[in-house]
Length: 375
Image 1 (tube, rainbow, N blue to C red):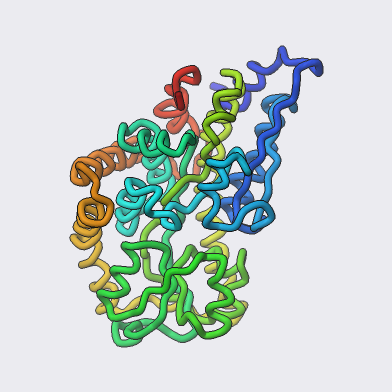
Image 2: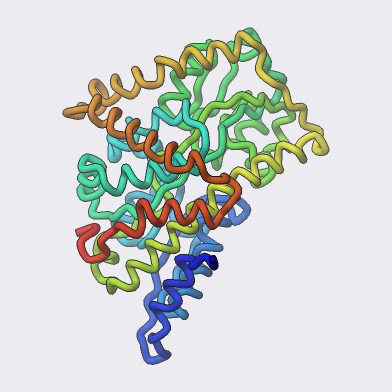
């Protein structure tokens, strides 16, 4: 039987749109370079799909790097209308996104970035606490992401617990910083855009990020050692969120185009991200990079932290730092959502893009009421 894709359905929806229809342009901003998978698949390729499906009646003008906004301004810039759709790393603005930062802590123990991205999107779109968080900022969440496993990219070899002690490591958020402290390392809180300079100048000994950054950000020029230790997935913030007033001005069919193309782009991005990370790992030795597996003591320290420390930290941060009313409920609901999506994808070939897109579309995006969502 011939599969009917979301793009095909939407093309049919827009078939009646002629040249007389007014064109709508939305300004998008993502601060990664064009070579980064979140930019390449999630914004540049996605914007082309939006243009094609809407027959040119809806366009996304994408600004990349810091051309429009610096990394930590992709929430305030969205809220203020400097951009109408952005990517944002939620750990950069924890006070503004407390619920997000609590849920993001659980990423250190999660595998399968496709299922995680779907679960995050489902939870952030439908959980009352998460919807209230976005409502406070007058923005509308449209879709998430989840990285492949974070690894350590270092100036010198890091294999054992003794090796990692005292190392200054760029960490992406609270949970990775706590693990660094637990193994005697020194966490450094800087944007990922500063990793290259920090490593080059010796201000950092290592950087924790997905392995694709060896290539997409040329880290293999300044980090000749990779510790292939699975530090879990990062998904804080969002891949696509839209300014509330902009969303309200869109017609229902335009909202549907955004939702359904974002649904497909999420799968493309997750698979592309993983492929880019795996490709960089394969290519790294030709660039003079040595890849090392963690010794048993270093791996054990991570496993023990993931088993209890991550969840405990999420609850502690939620209660003590962010003063949330029910951090336990928030964590439990997210864990249930992640389990649901793990089951939904458990019998699917994880390389079959169309099958994965159908699961995401059928179980999440097709159920979004374009008239009521975001109001």
